[in-house]
Length: 71
Image (cartoon, rainbow, N blue to C red):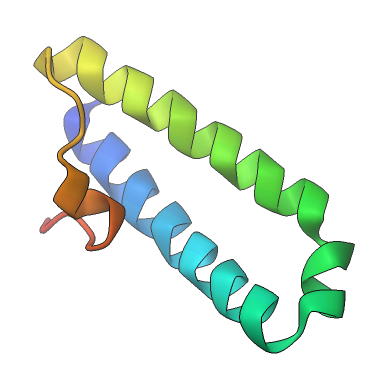
């Protein structure tokens, strides 16, 4: 996987996590139905962090946990 692909996938999954967080706040019963999918997305993000570190030698900066990568 290239650094560009990691950034694209990170941004896509970050949007999904933010949407899930909003759903958890607004409609917790709906969020609970999709908890396994939320966990899957978290695992994907963890793998992306690992891939990023393998390529760059650095951890993903904290700012990208709130904002997307600029591509």
